[in-house]
Amino acid sequence: MATWAEFATAAPELAERGRALLERGGHGSGLLATVRRELTPRIHPVTIAIVDGHLYTFVLASAKRRDLEQDGRYALHSHLDLEAPNEFMVRGHAHPVGDPVRATIAAGWAFEVDDGYDLYELAVDSAVFGSRPTADDWPPRYTTWVG
Image (spheres, one colour):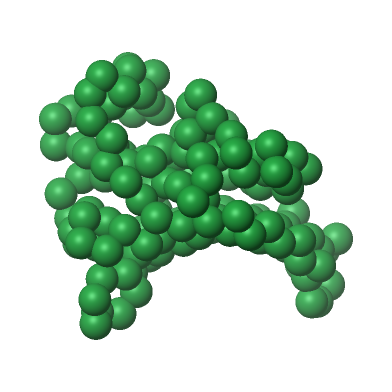
């Protein structure tokens, strides 16, 4: 498992292009897929941020948080824009992060974070960038990194 910084050092162009897609709305966001035991996968919209070389998300008490607590595996996919249909996904394991890091990250977060939110670092095991000139071009051209 790698931090975002380690991934970016190993695959700088892929990390830069992926970050641009995750942050294209002005702040970081994506779709977080989680799994737990024999249950089917779930997908959730989340706010993310890359801070000091680490990929983070805050999670309220929910099925999503139980998945991360009990299993930890995740996939994070960028939102798709049909006008610019490139896509990006990272996969790995999520780990809870406590204070003082949590308090520091919360102070600069895109929304107000209260005590109901737990902070998770999303460690990167692999990343995929799919490139298409238009939404009608198929299949995408994929670039992959595996840590």
